Length: 170
Image (cartoon, rainbow, N blue to C red; front, side):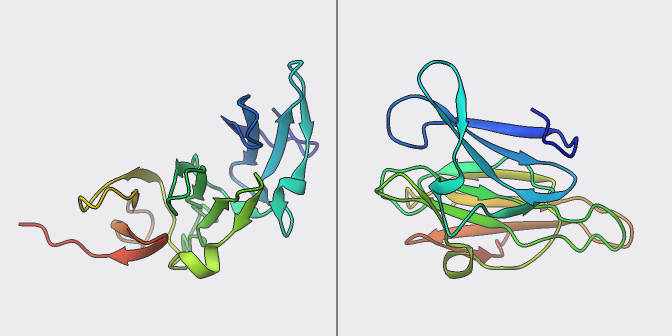
């Protein structure tokens, strides 16, 4: 997909409204732009519906593909957008975006209350259980660019709050 500004839109297909049919979340790369929701109308067409976002469509800034997991253990999909931010010197990065699925099949931006707001450009990301507690944790990494340094960040899921963690390697 391409938006009216000519930016390529990336798409994640997942059931957003609980009807068992895949809908679409779209987001632009290499630019700060809103995430948009398109609901499958069951005839093969998708209808733009940003009312799914509580408080309006959130902005992402050059994100990688969203990590999808049930971060708050409510059996609904949640989304973590690992934003890279402006891709040039001094590579400042951007705050990540965390959206929780709600019981009424909407998406709530819980970034401020459930996520450490550290900024760093992210170029690799993964979700999995890093500490054996059966909750999805997050790994984010960036390479060395310009005057920056290589970094890896682990965020452990502590009852739906993702906390920054520095592992000890032996």
